[in-house]
Picture 1: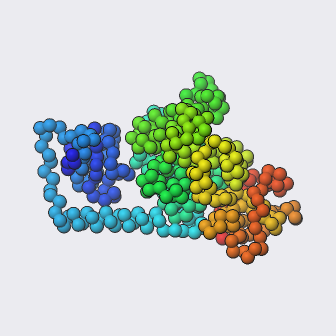
Picture 2 (picture 1 turned 60 degrees about the vertical axis):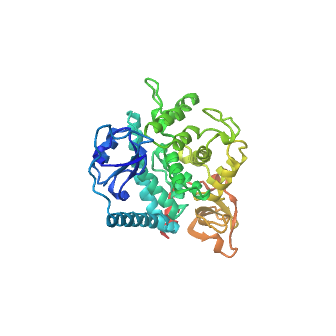
Length: 420
């Protein structure tokens, strides 16, 4: 049964069905949630929400004997005003989120989103280490900004994260995986809410790493722990995310992101469709970012080579979702180093929606001349056959070019292409 109460009557254990007014009047991302946190209760009572709709079938009711607050009736005029406010807010959000942008125009927005994200996630992981639960409304703005960037240009944020190396690995990995999950959900035509859940799962699936117990007098970090100990991060992550009040689908994806389709994964060894949809998506996005960006920044694996490795790993990933993922990131993802027919090395800096095999590249090295050349951005889909990709540059070609600090060069090439 739905009941309309004053925000001051809200109590722990109530299920919030709706907060009256537009989303600017309250500090919560979701409009429906179980009220189980004192801090959240205090913020609700202090907000500008006109009234709260509770569902007594899913949570507590107003205490017996306590009269309902004398709320002013919602007049037809006020109801129309509230509807107009909600419609305006929806239009602002829709315009902010869905208006397409070129790679160059979105690059700056993506950098801002990444910088904000790393601050929020680093603070959240530190607080996790201190035993504090993470709240959905704390990380929701990060997902919103990444979601908006991906909607405006699905390759800008992902490409930036392929190349940007000035972040602590764990935080950068969380942001990159979140963006990949949103891009994959977009390609799979998931609902708006499902894409948000996918982004949250990507952001939080490795939060358990911050909670791994470190041996006394341990001099290394979690990367040096035995594999058996590191595997426990999915258990810590599941429990940590669950205590924050996130949806069950997000919690489950965090728990399942190391399961394999053939049942050889962990922690449960679940196989096939026994793994949730978000869990199967998470396994692909997490593995891709791990392989494309190892801990050692100078040992970055080429994204196009990573795609080939994942395709060859029979039994690991859902083949249908993997095909959708390849379409989402491109045959040659942004950041891939490729060999052109002109015997030049180039980095992919943008995708071609009409022909994934003909992206835009930034040329920087001539194998014929054996030296770096003046950089040039080439749209292979519109160069009238003057050049084309022969294949992904292998380690032998990269060694022949003797490129100093490949990760830094990637970032410079992408920034130069976007600036141009």
